[in-house]
Amino acid sequence: MRNYNNNNFKSRKAGQKKLRRRKFKNTKGAERLTIYKTPGRFAPDRLRVNLTYHDTINVRSVSSSNALNWGYRSSAYDPDPGVLTGSIPGFVELANLYQSYCVHAMALDMEMANQNTESVIVVCWPSKVLQNTNSLSVDDLNEYAANLRGASAIVANTAGMNKAVLKTVATGEQLIGPRFKTDLDFSAITSTNPVETYAINIGVLNPFGNFTYGMCVRARVIYTVEFFEVRQLES
Image (cartoon, rainbow, N blue to C red; front, side, top):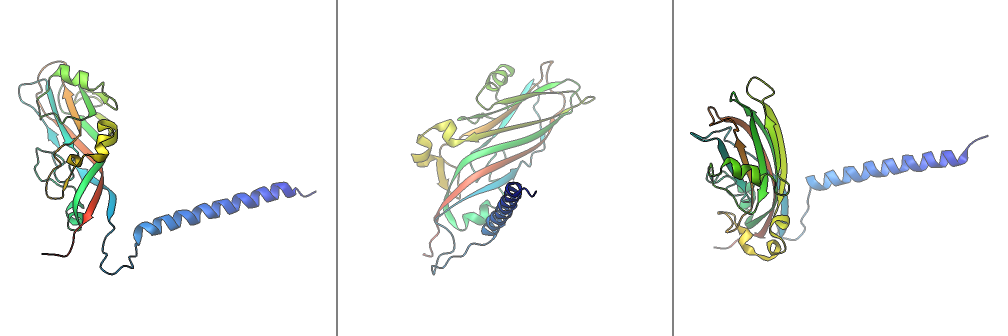
């Protein structure tokens, strides 16, 4: 005897799969093609994108100290103040279309290798404060790693498993609160940095003594950036 209920279930399930595939294809196509029918319009009033910043400093070091630190700030114009105008790929092109921007979030994906003969501890944490490069102590790094969304890892010496991966996310709304949505100081024109920023700070401490060699770093930060104020064709 044929089981009609089972056949109907299979038919419905197959139809749902086809519908999901169709929706997925349409979503991908929507990202590839946007059509504006209004004469003179060449960009939406507001555009939010995810831009990738790869740190160009691959070796982080410090002299005569057992702690080193640096950070990335919520500026798409200049993410690392130690680089100066080291803008994110794609930012300059979008700055030709828009006058202003705001960084809503930053997501860090960092891989680090230890070149020292001692094991070290790596920490990272989101913060409303961008710490000055190599300004913190071992006690500071141990304390700040306890912040919300902070992370830490032990990295073995150069003869062992001397590599670690850390990830964290910093959002303006979570770190600043309601003021982030209304205070224009967290936004800026596309040729400068915001007056107020938040940051992802990173530090490395050597529990056994001063650093002899630097740390090899591969850091990628995904910036969620909103562009607004479309540029007008005027003198």
